[in-house]
Each structure stands twice: as C-alpha cells, then as structure tokens.
Length: 88
Image (tube, rainbow, N blue to C red):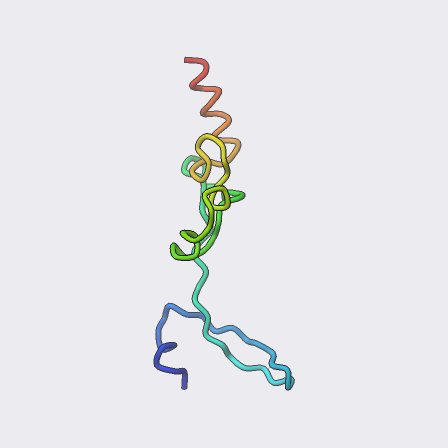
C-alpha cells in the first residue's frame, strides 16, 4: 500500500532496481508535456520542461531561447514571421 502522500493520480509508477537487486516501485510525479510551437505545433527546442516551480527557479536564458518569439514559435515559424514583417 502506498503512503498517504502517494495515493493520488498525479504520480506515476517507476520501477527502480535497488542495490540488493530487488525491483521496487517508486511513485514519482508526471513530467509536464513538451512545449509546442503556436503556429505549426512542432516541439520547441531549448525550452525548459518542468513544473512551474522548477522552471521558475531557472535563469531567464535557461527557460527559453533568446531570440524574437523565443519560447512561443519554433525557429522556422519565427523566421517566416520576421521575413513577413520585413516585407510590409
């Protein structure tokens, strides 16, 4: 029976091999979903993936790329958007 703090659906079962060779179940929180591009839905590179508490402890440059639309659009879509705005 899991401890009362672990009796929740917010945690996943992870099999861990102990030094004695036994395999035990540990309850760990789920990872948040990967950040995606607002235009095409592709996975964003260089964006931190963690709980809001974990991400909040990171420095600004570790949270997202330092370019226009960094952390919102992927590099391809941001490039298109910048070229489009330069044409106008």
